[in-house]
Length: 150
Ligand SMILES: [Zn+2]
Ligand SMILES: [Zn+2]
Image (cartoon, rainbow, N blue to C red; front, side):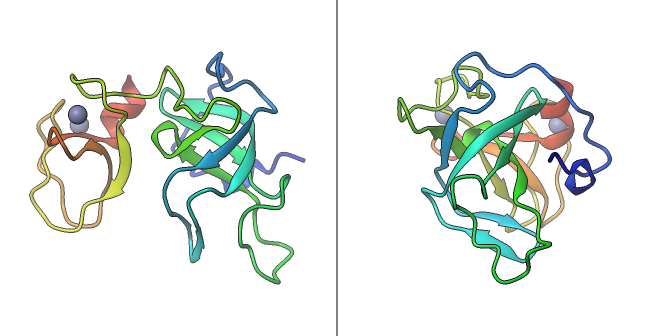
């Protein structure tokens, strides 16, 4: 059953899914993901449940036995993940609609570990500890507000 209460309230549901990651498609994480105090290792497998916005999907990690949610059976097994943090188990590729920099690298989510990261779209200078999407080889970064507006 879909538990919408695990979603941040500011994110509106966006029902369209990328054609290459349809509902029920198996995906795996490409980086360590944090959900509150729970972390999941790269390669954790889950199933696509729904689209959230231009850059994020809702994935059920419990369906394939993934997710290290511990003994707490009430812990959510659904997680909102950026397209840059999951790839198809079938093709091993990122979604074609994942956001990319001008050189075509997939933008990966990260948390700014120092102040002064600037969004290359709205040019806002971000505080330390803010979630962003970025390409490290090109030093191209986007804030979440710009990503959600795309
Ligand atoms: Zn921005
Ligand atoms: Zn790049």
